[in-house]
Image (cartoon, rainbow over all chains, first blue to last red; front, side, top):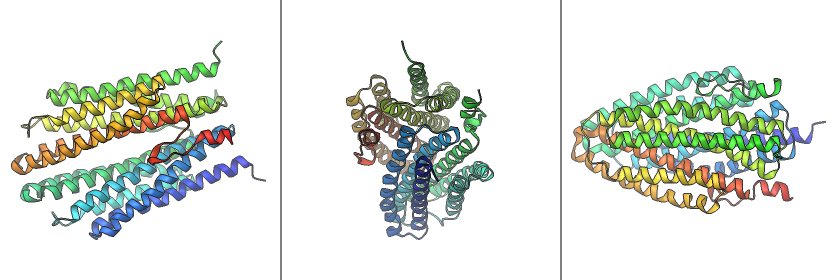
Amino acid sequence: MERHFDAALREAKQLLIGMAGYVETTIDSAMEGLEGRNVAKLRHVYEVEKTVNQDHIAVDDACVKLLALQQPLAADLRLIVAILKINTDLERMADQAVNIAQNSERYISCEPLKPLIDLPMMFREAKLMVREAIDAFVKRDLKLARDVLKRDEQVDLLKTQIFVDVLHHMKASPEKIEQGLSLILIARNVERIGDHATNIAEDVIYAITGEDVRHGSRGAGLKEAFTK
Amino acid sequence: MERHFDAALREAKQLLIGMAGYVETTIDSAMEGLEGRNVAKLRHVYEVEKTVNQDHIAVDDACVKLLALQQPLAADLRLIVAILKINTDLERMADQAVNIAQNSERYISCEPLKPLIDLPMMFREAKLMVREAIDAFVKRDLKLARDVLKRDEQVDLLKTQIFVDVLHHMKASPEKIEQGLSLILIARNVERIGDHATNIAEDVIYAITGEDVRHGSRGAGLKEAFTK
Protein backbone atom coordinates (compact mmCIF):
# COMPACT_ATOMS: atom_id res chain seq x y z
CA MET A 1 0.00 0.00 0.00
CA GLU A 2 1.25 3.46 -0.88
CA ARG A 3 2.22 5.63 2.11
CA HIS A 4 0.33 8.89 2.58
CA PHE A 5 3.60 10.73 2.12
CA ASP A 6 4.29 9.08 -1.24
CA ALA A 7 0.82 9.94 -2.46
CA ALA A 8 1.23 13.58 -1.40
CA LEU A 9 4.66 13.78 -3.06
CA ARG A 10 3.25 12.29 -6.24
CA GLU A 11 0.48 14.87 -6.13
CA ALA A 12 2.96 17.76 -5.79
CA LYS A 13 4.88 16.37 -8.75
CA GLN A 14 1.70 16.11 -10.84
CA LEU A 15 0.76 19.66 -9.90
CA LEU A 16 4.16 20.88 -11.12
CA ILE A 17 3.88 18.94 -14.38
CA GLY A 18 0.41 20.36 -15.00
CA MET A 19 1.75 23.86 -14.34
CA ALA A 20 4.61 23.23 -16.78
CA GLY A 21 1.97 22.51 -19.45
CA TYR A 22 0.42 25.93 -18.88
CA VAL A 23 3.84 27.58 -19.02
CA GLU A 24 4.48 25.91 -22.38
CA THR A 25 1.14 27.29 -23.57
CA THR A 26 2.19 30.84 -22.63
CA ILE A 27 5.41 30.44 -24.65
CA ASP A 28 3.65 28.89 -27.68
CA SER A 29 0.93 31.50 -27.64
CA ALA A 30 3.45 34.36 -27.43
CA MET A 31 5.44 32.90 -30.32
CA GLU A 32 2.39 32.28 -32.52
CA GLY A 33 1.02 35.74 -31.70
CA LEU A 34 4.24 37.41 -32.79
CA GLU A 35 4.73 35.33 -35.94
CA GLY A 36 1.08 35.52 -37.00
CA ARG A 37 0.70 39.17 -35.86
CA ASN A 38 -2.30 37.94 -33.87
CA VAL A 39 -3.32 40.10 -30.90
CA ALA A 40 -5.81 37.52 -29.57
CA LYS A 41 -3.02 34.94 -29.27
CA LEU A 42 -0.87 37.47 -27.43
CA ARG A 43 -3.63 38.37 -25.00
CA HIS A 44 -4.26 34.67 -24.37
CA VAL A 45 -0.82 34.66 -22.71
CA TYR A 46 -2.05 37.01 -19.97
CA GLU A 47 -5.02 34.74 -19.27
CA VAL A 48 -2.99 31.54 -19.01
CA GLU A 49 -0.39 33.25 -16.84
CA LYS A 50 -3.04 33.74 -14.15
CA THR A 51 -3.41 29.97 -13.91
CA VAL A 52 0.38 29.61 -13.72
CA ASN A 53 0.41 32.05 -10.80
CA GLN A 54 -2.22 30.07 -8.94
CA ASP A 55 -0.30 26.84 -9.51
CA HIS A 56 2.89 28.57 -8.38
CA ILE A 57 1.37 29.19 -4.95
CA ALA A 58 -0.23 25.73 -4.80
CA VAL A 59 3.04 23.91 -5.59
CA ASP A 60 4.98 25.83 -2.94
CA ASP A 61 2.24 25.14 -0.47
CA ALA A 62 2.27 21.40 -1.23
CA CYS A 63 6.07 21.26 -0.80
CA VAL A 64 6.08 23.12 2.51
CA LYS A 65 3.35 20.85 3.85
CA LEU A 66 5.38 17.81 2.80
CA LEU A 67 8.40 19.21 4.62
CA ALA A 68 6.34 20.13 7.67
CA LEU A 69 4.33 17.02 8.17
CA GLN A 70 6.88 14.35 7.34
CA GLN A 71 10.56 13.75 7.76
CA PRO A 72 11.48 12.99 4.17
CA LEU A 73 14.34 10.64 3.27
CA ALA A 74 17.37 11.92 1.34
CA ALA A 75 16.10 11.29 -2.20
CA ASP A 76 12.60 12.55 -1.36
CA LEU A 77 13.99 15.66 0.29
CA ARG A 78 16.11 16.41 -2.77
CA LEU A 79 13.04 15.97 -4.95
CA ILE A 80 10.97 18.36 -2.80
CA VAL A 81 13.73 21.00 -2.81
CA ALA A 82 14.05 20.57 -6.59
CA ILE A 83 10.29 21.00 -7.03
CA LEU A 84 10.42 24.22 -4.97
CA LYS A 85 13.15 25.58 -7.23
CA ILE A 86 11.68 24.37 -10.53
CA ASN A 87 8.41 26.00 -9.47
CA THR A 88 10.16 29.39 -9.24
CA ASP A 89 11.76 29.00 -12.66
CA LEU A 90 8.52 27.91 -14.31
CA GLU A 91 6.67 30.90 -12.93
CA ARG A 92 9.37 33.26 -14.16
CA MET A 93 9.28 31.66 -17.61
CA ALA A 94 5.60 32.60 -17.80
CA ASP A 95 6.58 36.16 -16.72
CA GLN A 96 8.97 36.25 -19.66
CA ALA A 97 6.19 35.01 -21.98
CA VAL A 98 4.05 37.91 -20.72
CA ASN A 99 6.90 40.33 -21.47
CA ILE A 100 7.24 38.83 -24.94
CA ALA A 101 3.50 39.25 -25.52
CA GLN A 102 3.65 42.90 -24.40
CA ASN A 103 6.68 43.65 -26.58
CA SER A 104 5.02 41.80 -29.47
CA GLU A 105 1.79 43.80 -29.11
CA ARG A 106 3.90 46.92 -29.49
CA TYR A 107 5.84 45.40 -32.41
CA ILE A 108 2.83 44.29 -34.47
CA SER A 109 1.07 47.64 -34.01
CA CYS A 110 3.63 49.16 -36.41
CA GLU A 111 5.08 48.28 -39.78
CA PRO A 112 7.54 45.33 -39.50
CA LEU A 113 11.24 46.17 -39.31
CA LYS A 114 12.24 43.07 -41.26
CA PRO A 115 11.02 39.53 -41.94
CA LEU A 116 11.27 37.44 -38.75
CA ILE A 117 13.69 34.65 -39.49
CA ASP A 118 16.13 33.91 -36.70
CA LEU A 119 13.81 34.98 -33.87
CA PRO A 120 11.32 32.13 -34.52
CA MET A 121 14.34 29.82 -34.80
CA MET A 122 15.60 31.01 -31.40
CA PHE A 123 12.10 30.61 -29.99
CA ARG A 124 11.89 27.01 -31.17
CA GLU A 125 15.29 26.22 -29.71
CA ALA A 126 14.36 27.72 -26.31
CA LYS A 127 11.01 25.95 -26.40
CA LEU A 128 12.82 22.65 -27.01
CA MET A 129 14.98 23.34 -23.95
CA VAL A 130 11.84 23.82 -21.86
CA ARG A 131 10.26 20.62 -23.21
CA GLU A 132 13.41 18.58 -22.61
CA ALA A 133 13.95 20.00 -19.11
CA ILE A 134 10.40 19.04 -18.13
CA ASP A 135 10.71 15.62 -19.80
CA ALA A 136 13.97 15.07 -17.92
CA PHE A 137 12.11 15.82 -14.69
CA VAL A 138 9.18 13.53 -15.53
CA LYS A 139 11.34 10.61 -16.72
CA ARG A 140 14.22 11.23 -14.29
CA ASP A 141 16.45 11.28 -17.39
CA LEU A 142 19.96 12.49 -16.60
CA LYS A 143 21.15 12.43 -20.20
CA LEU A 144 18.27 14.60 -21.35
CA ALA A 145 18.93 17.07 -18.50
CA ARG A 146 22.57 17.35 -19.60
CA ASP A 147 21.48 17.89 -23.23
CA VAL A 148 19.51 20.96 -22.09
CA LEU A 149 22.68 22.50 -20.63
CA LYS A 150 24.47 22.08 -23.96
CA ARG A 151 21.60 23.55 -25.95
CA ASP A 152 21.79 26.83 -24.02
CA GLU A 153 24.92 27.89 -25.90
CA GLN A 154 23.02 27.64 -29.18
CA VAL A 155 20.27 29.94 -27.88
CA ASP A 156 22.85 32.49 -26.68
CA LEU A 157 24.56 32.44 -30.08
CA LEU A 158 21.25 33.02 -31.84
CA LYS A 159 20.57 35.98 -29.55
CA THR A 160 23.89 37.62 -30.39
CA GLN A 161 23.20 37.08 -34.11
CA ILE A 162 19.75 38.65 -33.78
CA PHE A 163 21.17 41.66 -31.90
CA VAL A 164 23.71 42.32 -34.67
CA ASP A 165 21.15 41.88 -37.44
CA VAL A 166 18.46 44.05 -35.80
CA LEU A 167 21.00 46.81 -35.07
CA HIS A 168 21.95 46.77 -38.72
CA HIS A 169 18.30 47.22 -39.74
CA MET A 170 17.78 49.96 -37.15
CA LYS A 171 20.68 51.93 -38.57
CA ALA A 172 19.38 51.50 -42.11
CA SER A 173 15.83 52.57 -41.12
CA PRO A 174 16.07 54.89 -38.10
CA GLU A 175 12.35 55.62 -38.40
CA LYS A 176 11.80 52.03 -37.21
CA ILE A 177 13.96 52.24 -34.09
CA GLU A 178 11.00 51.31 -31.85
CA GLN A 179 10.36 48.13 -33.79
CA GLY A 180 14.03 47.17 -33.57
CA LEU A 181 13.99 47.78 -29.85
CA SER A 182 10.95 45.53 -29.40
CA LEU A 183 12.66 42.71 -31.29
CA ILE A 184 15.80 43.07 -29.18
CA LEU A 185 13.82 42.97 -25.96
CA ILE A 186 11.94 39.89 -27.21
CA ALA A 187 15.22 38.13 -28.06
CA ARG A 188 16.41 38.95 -24.54
CA ASN A 189 13.18 37.48 -23.07
CA VAL A 190 13.60 34.29 -25.09
CA GLU A 191 17.19 34.01 -23.89
CA ARG A 192 15.92 34.25 -20.29
CA ILE A 193 13.48 31.40 -20.96
CA GLY A 194 16.46 29.32 -22.03
CA ASP A 195 18.26 30.31 -18.82
CA HIS A 196 15.32 29.17 -16.72
CA ALA A 197 15.23 25.84 -18.60
CA THR A 198 18.93 25.48 -17.78
CA ASN A 199 18.18 26.08 -14.09
CA ILE A 200 15.47 23.41 -14.21
CA ALA A 201 17.84 20.92 -15.85
CA GLU A 202 20.40 21.61 -13.09
CA ASP A 203 17.72 21.00 -10.45
CA VAL A 204 16.76 17.72 -12.13
CA ILE A 205 20.39 16.59 -12.03
CA TYR A 206 20.51 17.53 -8.35
CA ALA A 207 17.27 15.68 -7.58
CA ILE A 208 18.51 12.50 -9.28
CA THR A 209 22.16 12.46 -8.22
CA GLY A 210 22.48 14.89 -5.29
CA GLU A 211 25.16 16.63 -7.34
CA ASP A 212 25.18 20.44 -7.53
CA VAL A 213 26.33 21.29 -11.08
CA ARG A 214 25.56 25.03 -10.91
CA HIS A 215 28.33 27.58 -11.47
CA GLY A 216 30.48 24.75 -12.86
CA SER A 217 30.59 23.32 -9.33
CA ARG A 218 30.69 19.63 -8.59
CA GLY A 219 29.77 19.85 -4.91
CA ALA A 220 28.44 16.65 -3.42
CA GLY A 221 25.60 18.61 -1.82
CA LEU A 222 23.08 16.56 0.09
CA LYS A 223 24.72 13.27 -0.78
CA GLU A 224 27.57 14.21 1.50
CA ALA A 225 25.24 15.09 4.37
CA PHE A 226 23.94 11.52 4.29
CA THR A 227 27.08 9.51 3.73
CA LYS A 228 29.24 11.25 6.31
CA MET B 1 22.01 26.43 26.06
CA GLU B 2 21.48 26.91 22.34
CA ARG B 3 20.37 23.77 20.48
CA HIS B 4 22.60 22.52 17.68
CA PHE B 5 19.74 23.18 15.27
CA ASP B 6 19.39 26.82 16.31
CA ALA B 7 23.13 27.37 15.92
CA ALA B 8 23.07 25.81 12.44
CA LEU B 9 20.04 27.91 11.45
CA ARG B 10 21.73 31.06 12.72
CA GLU B 11 24.79 30.12 10.68
CA ALA B 12 22.73 29.70 7.49
CA LYS B 13 21.15 33.10 8.13
CA GLN B 14 24.57 34.71 8.65
CA LEU B 15 25.86 33.11 5.47
CA LEU B 16 22.92 34.61 3.54
CA ILE B 17 23.45 38.06 5.07
CA GLY B 18 27.16 37.92 4.19
CA MET B 19 26.25 36.94 0.63
CA ALA B 20 23.78 39.85 0.44
CA GLY B 21 26.70 42.17 1.24
CA TYR B 22 28.63 40.87 -1.76
CA VAL B 23 25.55 41.24 -3.96
CA GLU B 24 25.25 44.88 -2.89
CA THR B 25 28.92 45.34 -3.81
CA THR B 26 28.26 44.03 -7.34
CA ILE B 27 25.41 46.53 -7.76
CA ASP B 28 27.41 49.47 -6.34
CA SER B 29 30.43 48.64 -8.42
CA ALA B 30 28.35 48.36 -11.61
CA MET B 31 26.68 51.70 -10.89
CA GLU B 32 29.95 53.49 -10.06
CA GLY B 33 31.65 51.97 -13.10
CA LEU B 34 28.93 53.25 -15.42
CA GLU B 35 28.67 56.72 -13.87
CA GLY B 36 32.44 57.20 -13.59
CA ARG B 37 33.16 55.46 -16.93
CA ASN B 38 35.57 53.27 -14.96
CA VAL B 39 36.38 49.88 -16.52
CA ALA B 40 38.21 48.61 -13.41
CA LYS B 41 35.06 49.13 -11.32
CA LEU B 42 33.01 47.26 -13.91
CA ARG B 43 35.42 44.33 -14.02
CA HIS B 44 35.39 44.19 -10.23
CA VAL B 45 31.74 43.08 -10.57
CA TYR B 46 32.83 39.86 -12.32
CA GLU B 47 35.27 39.08 -9.50
CA VAL B 48 32.78 39.62 -6.69
CA GLU B 49 30.12 37.62 -8.52
CA LYS B 50 32.33 34.52 -8.21
CA THR B 51 32.10 34.83 -4.42
CA VAL B 52 28.33 35.24 -4.67
CA ASN B 53 28.14 32.02 -6.70
CA GLN B 54 30.13 30.13 -4.08
CA ASP B 55 27.88 31.47 -1.31
CA HIS B 56 24.82 30.55 -3.39
CA ILE B 57 25.81 26.89 -3.30
CA ALA B 58 26.85 27.04 0.38
CA VAL B 59 23.52 28.57 1.50
CA ASP B 60 21.45 25.96 -0.37
CA ASP B 61 23.62 23.27 1.09
CA ALA B 62 23.17 24.59 4.65
CA CYS B 63 19.37 24.75 4.20
CA VAL B 64 19.08 21.23 2.81
CA LYS B 65 21.18 19.89 5.67
CA LEU B 66 18.95 21.67 8.18
CA LEU B 67 15.88 20.11 6.54
CA ALA B 68 17.51 16.69 6.39
CA LEU B 69 18.94 16.40 9.84
CA GLN B 70 16.20 18.02 11.89
CA GLN B 71 12.45 18.22 11.89
CA PRO B 72 12.04 21.98 12.00
CA LEU B 73 9.07 23.65 13.67
CA ALA B 74 6.63 25.77 11.67
CA ALA B 75 8.37 29.14 12.04
CA ASP B 76 11.83 27.60 11.53
CA LEU B 77 10.64 25.72 8.47
CA ARG B 78 9.21 28.89 6.97
CA LEU B 79 12.51 30.64 7.63
CA ILE B 80 14.51 27.87 5.93
CA VAL B 81 12.21 27.87 2.89
CA ALA B 82 12.47 31.68 2.76
CA ILE B 83 16.28 31.50 2.92
CA LEU B 84 16.28 29.00 0.03
CA LYS B 85 14.20 31.40 -2.07
CA ILE B 86 16.02 34.59 -1.07
CA ASN B 87 19.25 32.83 -1.96
CA THR B 88 18.02 32.33 -5.54
CA ASP B 89 16.98 35.97 -5.88
CA LEU B 90 20.25 37.28 -4.47
CA GLU B 91 22.26 35.18 -6.90
CA ARG B 92 20.18 36.43 -9.83
CA MET B 93 20.63 40.03 -8.71
CA ALA B 94 24.36 39.53 -9.01
CA ASP B 95 23.76 38.07 -12.51
CA GLN B 96 21.93 41.28 -13.38
CA ALA B 97 24.85 43.33 -12.01
CA VAL B 98 27.16 41.34 -14.31
CA ASN B 99 24.86 42.12 -17.25
CA ILE B 100 24.89 45.80 -16.30
CA ALA B 101 28.69 45.75 -16.14
CA GLN B 102 28.89 44.12 -19.58
CA ASN B 103 26.42 46.57 -21.12
CA SER B 104 28.26 49.44 -19.41
CA GLU B 105 31.63 48.31 -20.76
CA ARG B 106 30.09 48.52 -24.22
CA TYR B 107 28.48 51.87 -23.44
CA ILE B 108 31.59 53.61 -22.12
CA SER B 109 33.73 52.38 -25.02
CA CYS B 110 31.85 54.87 -27.28
CA GLU B 111 30.88 58.51 -27.10
CA PRO B 112 28.00 59.05 -24.58
CA LEU B 113 24.49 59.29 -26.01
CA LYS B 114 23.38 61.81 -23.38
CA PRO B 115 24.17 62.85 -19.81
CA LEU B 116 23.10 60.11 -17.40
CA ILE B 117 20.45 61.61 -15.17
CA ASP B 118 17.48 59.36 -14.52
CA LEU B 119 19.43 56.09 -14.81
CA PRO B 120 21.55 56.78 -11.68
CA MET B 121 18.32 57.85 -9.96
CA MET B 122 16.69 54.54 -10.92
CA PHE B 123 19.81 52.71 -9.77
CA ARG B 124 19.68 54.37 -6.35
CA GLU B 125 16.01 53.56 -5.96
CA ALA B 126 16.55 49.88 -6.84
CA LYS B 127 19.57 49.76 -4.55
CA LEU B 128 17.44 51.12 -1.71
CA MET B 129 14.90 48.34 -2.36
CA VAL B 130 17.69 45.77 -2.03
CA ARG B 131 18.98 47.36 1.19
CA GLU B 132 15.51 47.54 2.72
CA ALA B 133 14.61 43.98 1.71
CA ILE B 134 17.76 42.66 3.37
CA ASP B 135 17.24 44.87 6.44
CA ALA B 136 13.66 43.59 6.67
CA PHE B 137 15.05 40.05 6.67
CA VAL B 138 17.72 40.79 9.29
CA LYS B 139 15.39 42.71 11.63
CA ARG B 140 12.25 40.67 10.84
CA ASP B 141 10.62 44.01 10.03
CA LEU B 142 7.22 43.57 8.35
CA LYS B 143 6.66 47.27 7.73
CA LEU B 144 9.99 47.62 5.95
CA ALA B 145 9.21 44.56 3.80
CA ARG B 146 5.90 46.12 2.78
CA ASP B 147 7.66 49.43 1.95
CA VAL B 148 9.83 47.55 -0.55
CA LEU B 149 6.74 46.35 -2.41
CA LYS B 150 5.47 49.92 -2.74
CA ARG B 151 8.82 51.22 -3.93
CA ASP B 152 8.80 48.85 -6.92
CA GLU B 153 6.22 50.99 -8.75
CA GLN B 154 8.59 53.95 -8.61
CA VAL B 155 11.38 51.92 -10.20
CA ASP B 156 9.05 50.73 -12.98
CA LEU B 157 7.94 54.31 -13.66
CA LEU B 158 11.55 55.47 -13.89
CA LYS B 159 12.27 52.68 -16.37
CA THR B 160 9.41 53.74 -18.65
CA GLN B 161 10.60 57.34 -18.46
CA ILE B 162 14.17 56.28 -19.38
CA PHE B 163 12.91 54.18 -22.31
CA VAL B 164 10.99 57.15 -23.75
CA ASP B 165 13.90 59.55 -23.24
CA VAL B 166 16.55 57.23 -24.69
CA LEU B 167 14.37 56.45 -27.72
CA HIS B 168 14.04 60.18 -28.32
CA HIS B 169 17.84 60.56 -28.28
CA MET B 170 18.31 57.52 -30.51
CA LYS B 171 16.01 59.01 -33.13
CA ALA B 172 17.81 62.37 -32.94
CA SER B 173 21.25 60.72 -33.26
CA PRO B 174 20.84 57.44 -35.18
CA GLU B 175 24.63 57.09 -35.30
CA LYS B 176 24.45 56.40 -31.56
CA ILE B 177 21.85 53.64 -31.72
CA GLU B 178 24.21 51.15 -30.02
CA GLN B 179 24.71 53.45 -27.06
CA GLY B 180 20.95 53.91 -26.69
CA LEU B 181 20.45 50.18 -26.81
CA SER B 182 23.02 49.65 -24.05
CA LEU B 183 21.25 52.18 -21.82
CA ILE B 184 17.89 50.53 -22.43
CA LEU B 185 19.26 47.10 -21.59
CA ILE B 186 20.85 48.53 -18.42
CA ALA B 187 17.54 50.10 -17.36
CA ARG B 188 15.89 46.71 -17.92
CA ASN B 189 18.58 45.05 -15.75
CA VAL B 190 18.05 47.57 -12.95
CA GLU B 191 14.31 46.95 -13.14
CA ARG B 192 14.99 43.22 -12.71
CA ILE B 193 17.06 43.96 -9.59
CA GLY B 194 14.02 45.76 -8.19
CA ASP B 195 11.87 42.73 -9.05
CA HIS B 196 14.23 40.43 -7.16
CA ALA B 197 14.13 42.77 -4.15
CA THR B 198 10.33 42.55 -4.32
CA ASN B 199 10.54 38.76 -4.30
CA ILE B 200 12.79 38.89 -1.23
CA ALA B 201 10.39 41.22 0.58
CA GLU B 202 7.55 38.79 -0.17
CA ASP B 203 9.61 35.92 1.22
CA VAL B 204 10.37 37.93 4.37
CA ILE B 205 6.64 38.54 4.87
CA TYR B 206 6.04 34.81 4.40
CA ALA B 207 8.79 33.87 6.86
CA ILE B 208 7.41 36.20 9.54
CA THR B 209 3.66 35.71 9.10
CA GLY B 210 3.20 32.53 7.04
CA GLU B 211 1.22 34.65 4.61
CA ASP B 212 1.78 34.25 0.88
CA VAL B 213 1.39 37.74 -0.63
CA ARG B 214 2.66 36.88 -4.11
CA HIS B 215 0.43 37.44 -7.14
CA GLY B 216 -1.85 39.56 -4.96
CA SER B 217 -2.77 36.38 -3.10
CA ARG B 218 -3.53 36.25 0.58
CA GLY B 219 -3.22 32.49 1.01
CA ALA B 220 -2.62 31.35 4.55
CA GLY B 221 0.16 29.07 3.32
CA LEU B 222 2.01 27.14 5.97
CA LYS B 223 0.08 28.71 8.83
CA GLU B 224 -2.94 26.77 7.70
CA ALA B 225 -1.02 23.49 7.62
CA PHE B 226 -0.27 23.98 11.28
CA THR B 227 -3.55 25.29 12.61
CA LYS B 228 -5.80 22.79 10.85
